[in-house]
Image (cartoon, rainbow, N blue to C red):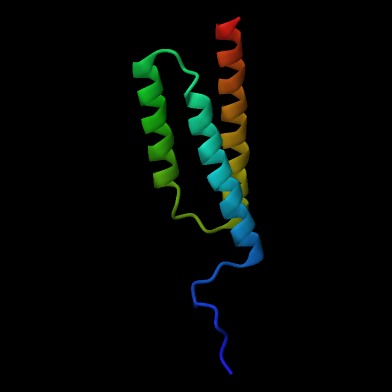
Length: 87
């Protein structure tokens, strides 16, 4: 009896990592709403899209976790600088 899962089904770890990546992507774009200068906002959006698109081929768990760590750090830095600029 064969499995009903497609051959390309993600493992639980892969699925969880994918969810983390998607959450980071959404969080970045939610945060970019607060960038007041429109040209800077558009530039940052394009940078984020390009960065995610250029790295979507990675399948190694350690590589993805490393990129997630740096992406979260970059998001925190952006949030801090936006908070300072609003003060």
